[in-house]
Length: 148
Image 1 (tube, helix red, strand yellow):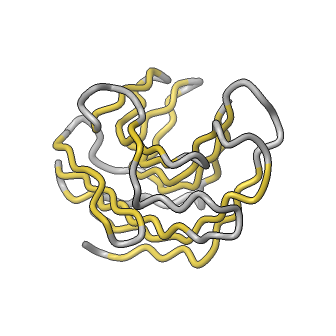
Image 2: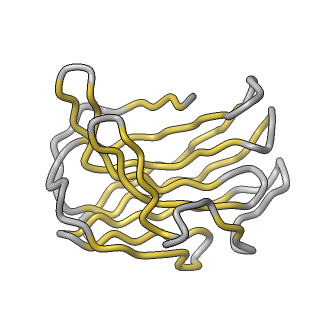
């Protein structure tokens, strides 16, 4: 299950930066940011940029509630040494949605990029989720949104 929150903005091209801390719960989780979020009835569309408490990452999109991982190209979360796994560590996420080009960095290390033009504008958001166990807690701080 994933949960997210948005401020209610209508944006196109942006870089979103935020500091995250995995605080508690299962390490088999996911958390990060989204851009170009829209909702039509009960269907959501957005690009996502996620890491996990156990050091994995993925980026992709959700269209009509169907999730597709676009990077890594294997379609699965992949490990990265750039993601700090200690519960006291701060991971600094940076996602850029600029035209059809999307990129994701963690702690200054570029983890991936992809091109896609299906979603052109929408809201930003913060998101967190868990898989088999409940109780994940993620802290977000110092959110900055700017032009790329």
